[in-house]
Amino acid sequence: MLRAARGAIAVTYALTLVENACTVAYPALTGLAVDRLLKRDPSGLYALVAVWMLHLALSFFRQRYDTRVFMGLNARIASHMVIDQQEKGHGTSTVSARVEMVRGIVGFFEKEVPAMFHHAVAVVGSLAMLFTYDVDAGLIAMAVLLPMALVNNWYWRKAVRLNQGINNQVEREVDDIVSARPFRIRRHFWLMRRWRVMLSDAESWTWAVTELCTIGALVFILVDFTQSPKFTAGAIYAVLAYVYDYLEGLNQVPSLVNNLARLKDVRARL
Image (cartoon, rainbow, N blue to C red):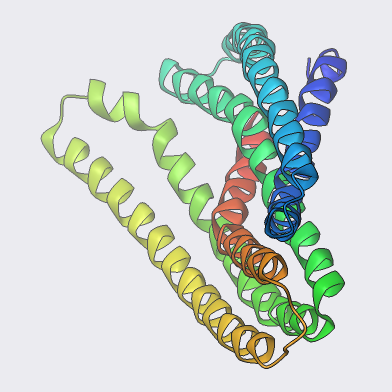
C-alpha cells in the first residue's frame, strides 16, 4: 500500500526538501540583506522576502496535502491489517496493539521522515555554508561527527533491544487488563515503566555526549572566528546562525535513532 501511494508521498517529500532549502538560505540572505542595507541598497531585503514568501506558500500547501495523503494511507493499511491478523488467529490484544503500531508507522512517514529531511539538510547545508564562509569553522564543525557517530551507534543497538521489549509488553496490554487480576495488571505497568526508563536513560546518555561535543565545537568556532578581522556584520550573523543550525541538527540525532529503531521492530511484527 505504501508503494501504491509512493507518488503522493514523493510529492510531499519533494515539497519538504524545497522548504528546507529555503530555511538553509535564510542566514545567508539575511546577512546579505544586512550588508546591503548598510550601503542603502534594499535588493538583499527583496531577495530575503521573496524566498520567505515562497516558503510560506509551499508550507501552507504541503501541510494541507500531506494530512490527506497520510490519513488516507492509515485508514487503508489499518483496515487491511486487522482483517489479515484476525484471519491468522491473533487475539484482540495483539491486533489492537498492532493497529496502534500501524498508526505509529504512518505517523513516522508523515512527521519523522520530514523531520529527518529537515535535520539532514540543516546539518549538510549548514556545514557546506560554514566551509564557504570560513574553512577552519567548517573543519571544527566536521570534527564533531566522529564522536557523534560512535555514541549513536551504541544507542542504536540499545534502542533496538529496548523498543522490542516495549512493544512485546504493549501487545499483552489488553489481555492483562481484561484478566482483572491485580497482580498481573500491576506487573504489566511496572514492566512498561522499566522498559521506558531504560530507554530514556540510554537516550539521556547519548544526548549528554552529543551536547558536550557541540559545546566544545561552538567554543572553538567562536574563538577561531572572532580572531579574523575580514568578516562583515552580515557574514558574522550568517556564520553564527549556521553554527547553531548545524549543532541543533546534530542534537536531534538521538531522537531520530530511537524512532528508526522503533520502526524496525514494528515492521518486523507486521
